[in-house]
Image 1 (tube, one colour):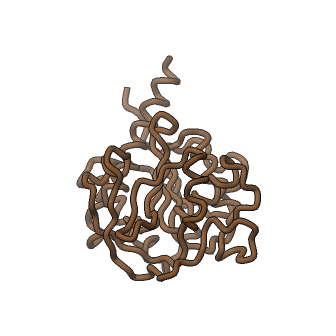
Image 2 (cartoon, helix red, strand yellow; image 1 turned 30 degrees about the horizontal axis):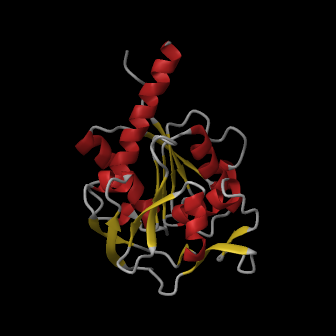
Length: 245
C-alpha cells in the first residue's frame, strides 16, 4: 500500500515582501525533483493556527519568519501542538524565538515569559533585542557533537544567513536547559543559534535563529529543510502503520 503524500503546515502570515516566504515554493519544488520528497503544503496564518483542530492531519509543521506575527498566540499554539503531539517541527528565525517562548511558558512554568519585541516591559524577557542586529548578517554556527543538529547539517561548523534582531536572553539558558530544552548550535561568541528536543522525547523538533530557507540560490533545499521533509514522510508512514494495525 502506498502511503499518502505527507501534509506540511507552513505557519506564517504569508507575504510577498518576506523573502523567506517567497523562497518556499521553489524549495518545495526542489525537494520533489532533487530529493523525491514530495509534500502537500498548506499556508496557515497565525490567526488561524490557534483555532481548535487547525493542525489536525498534518505530518509536519514549519513556523516561518515574519514577526511580529498577526497572532503571537497562534504561533505559540502551533509550537505547542507540534511539541505535544510529536509532529515533526521546524522553527526558523521568529520560529526559534517563539519556540523558546512557548517552552518557557508551558514546560518550564515561566508564566511571565515574554518576547521583547511584543512586550518590552514583560516580567521575564526570554527573548530580547540582540546587542548586534543580525539583519542581513552571515556567520559561523558550531554544532554540538552528537546532536540532532550536527547529524542534520552533517558538520560541526557551518555558515548560515540571518535576518533578525531578536534572540535568546542567555540569562535564562540554564533554566531552559534544566527544563529539557537542548541548545545545540552557537556562534563564535557562544550565543545560541539552534535548539532541539532529544529524539527520545520527540521524533524531530528543531529550530534555528538563522534562516535556512535563504541558503544558496534557492534551487536546493538546506539540510534542515530536507530533514523536516524526511521526518514528515516518516510520520506519514508511522500513521499508516498505526491505522493498519
